[in-house]
Length: 315
Image 1 (cartoon, helix red, strand yellow):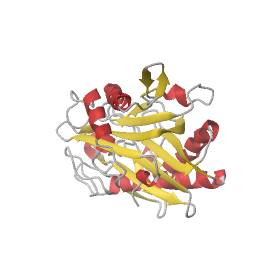
Image 2: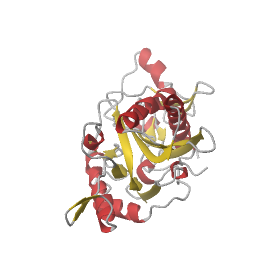
Image 3: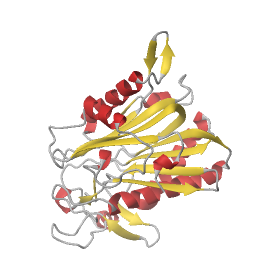
Image 4: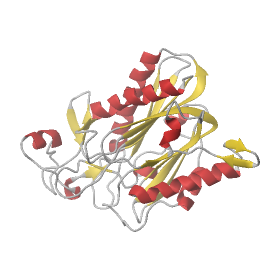
């Protein structure tokens, strides 16, 4: 299993700055992808998501950018856009080529150097490095500065990262997810119902506070921490823009299973859905597969994250 690159027609590129502890992840769909998006929580940061509205004239997109750096990280999408233009990939208008590249950012300025963020050059480098090799996971790309379990503050949090997972419906149809896990809440393994990474009871403790239970008992968010988990699900099944939008909505169920609390007013949780194939599949089955792929990608994102910037990781 390679993760998101199991889907033919998708390449992934990732760049990390380990001094600043930030980075970006780009997904290239150079043949064009029918796409949809679903945003939840109250702290989203994005650009060009309007093109994913089923009423928008754009039939497809050519790439996606996920970046750290909060609003500053939106600059990285310009690098991906320039790379695609240089390859003559995009919508032709006379002699011009305009690549359609939505972008979403997450907040990682509380770890590393907040004065260094993903740039246009970083986005372009990530695009140039993109391949259909197995997706690198853990502290890489947009996951470099990811953290989870911040209800008690960053000093009692744990590392998050990038995870990717593929679900096969049969020999022909696949649904895959790539997630940058940067949640306020804890990460839960649905198989056991137990916290696998999240807020710890004290700075030096290995015991989990269980953020949802702590909130019910009167705990309050410690300080200003910002978050946002970003996910991309892709399938080789043929979808319309309406169906892609619905698939993004159904994929959010994977976040609900694996993150607690989720979709908060301090998160900007966003899921993109991409269709890059021509296979035929039952749509309900695709929705179930998308949710499962997101859940498993979230678990991989924290299990493969290493200690970085003083924040402990499971890996």
